[in-house]
Length: 195
Image (spheres, rainbow, N blue to C red):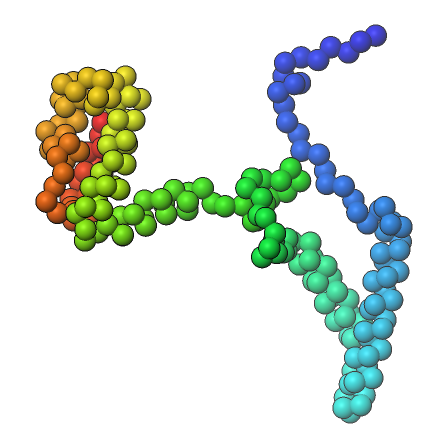
């Protein structure tokens, strides 16, 4: 008898539990024995050091302290992010299938830097502003016009001019004598967002 699979079964996503590494190498019993052996060795060392210094502490307090430290160490090791990639290695660009990729680039930071650096570089230079920033602002205006109204400044200049408004149209099509101030640039961006 064949089992029928519905569309909902195909489109649902359930995460698979991560593979248990500890069970492959001997199970839970071996891990407990190893922890107890380490705890015993560390307890013996701590008691020897305390007795050499002249302090008398109950063995059960030392055992409890050592076990608490080992438990905290194990929990923090499980929660720690993977180590950063080596300097010579290639950082992967996307997420890996089995967990968060801490070495991936942040797309928002890349986009912000794509505007921040050219704006800073051209803040006092009219030619740089006209060559670098003004075309990007024009592309943004054309994209907003295309998405919202189905036209660009080149395809329908008369309608684009009315939609953009005279101040924004003049700014985008006529190079200014000086780069705009941050306040003027904020006003231009606000006008672009209204499109």
